Structure formats: structure tokens, C-alpha cells
Image (cartoon, rainbow, N blue to C red; front, side, top):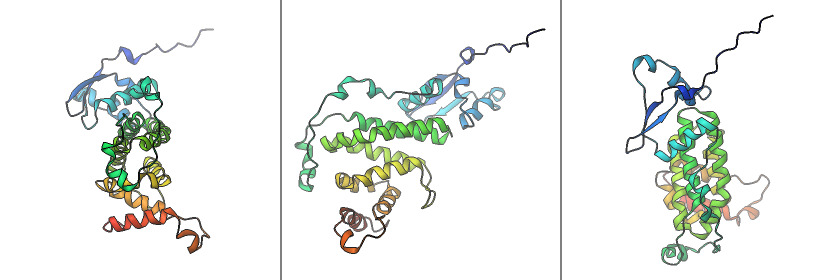
Length: 263
């Protein structure tokens, strides 16, 4: 009785890497085609399609920065990635939190609060960019992974923001602009998961982020609409007296007053 003939072992590490143009600087990355076979994704279609015979063996990822592509490729090879700041021990140094500033304090905080690096903020923004990459190329596993990683960074980011809002706030704005700029607006009942996560996060802590609203309005109009909708969703059965003093009412009023063109 003969044994069934075994298929020869094949490793994509034996394949000739293809080139990818990355970022504004047009850096050249090299990647094995086999690593880009990621389910029913656009990457899979790209490396298993007619490019081999057509001579189109260079990928154009110039819309994404090197750090984003580096993390995405690490996921393609190992099904996970680690953002650079997770490896930096200094991010775990305890920093005393300061209370959320008043309006006057917020306007003058640049000279009163000690500036420190927001590792969680940088991570939130990077995960958002990786999610955007995965969304464009339909890499579902990477999209889910990046979303989960971004969610895990939101609470640490809130702590960073309370300590240094001027330093941390820019990363929240970057993340929102990336997600809202690269994912579609569906309908009122269905929202992109990353949009949903960021909107829920800001809505849950709207009193902390209220001074960021003017900056969020610039280039994130749809986000402000979603945020106002989220804040207006009061629990059913609440009477007028119960809701009129709810801090969300003040936040909605502020949004409507400042952004009448959107709401």
C-alpha cells in the first residue's frame, strides 16, 4: 500500500519580493507576495492577479506613511503588530493628573501645564491609520485587529488628555479626521465600527472634551453631526425636568449654536 504523494512544501520566503512605494517620500518597501494573501482582500487580488505577466510589480501605497505600512505588513506576516510606543518604558512613568481645566484655564493652559508626550494619543492615531489602510484594501482581520487595539488605547488616552489636553488633543483630532475621511457615511442605523467607537468615546466624556469641539469642527463635520445625535439620545421615559439639567443638553445646545450649518 503506497502512501499518498505529498505536495512539496512551499514557503513564500522563497519568492522574489515585490516593491511598494510608501509615503510622501516615496520610500521603497519590499514584501513577499505570499504575505499579502489575506483572505478575500484587495491585496490578495492584487498579488494573485495578472500583475505577474503584465509587469506591474510595484505597489503604490504612497497615501500611507511608513509607520502605518510597517505595522500593516507586520500583521500580514505575523497576524499582529506592536506600535512603537508600547516598547518605550518611559510611557509607564506615573504622571500626576490635573483636574479638567475651566474655560479660562483651558485658554491659558499652554503656559501653565507641563507638556509631555502622549503615548496613548499617538497609538490611537496610528491604529486609526492602520484601520484606514485595512478598510481601503478590505483586509477584514487587520481591520478588526486595529479597531480592537484602538479601543484599548482610548481609556489610557483619556488619562493623558486630562493631564495635558493641549498635547493629547491633536491625536484625537487626527484619529477622527482619518476615520471620517476614509470611511463612508452609511445611514442613521448603521455606522462604521471605528466611527462608532470614536463617537461613543467622545460622547461619554463630552464634558472633558467640550473645549475641543471647535477644533473637531474643522474637517470633521460628519463627526459633529454624529456626536450631536449621540448626545441627544436620552433614555426613554425621562421627563422634561429630569433632562433639562442633564449636562448633555448643554453640550447639544453648544453644538447647535456653533455649528448651525451642520445640525
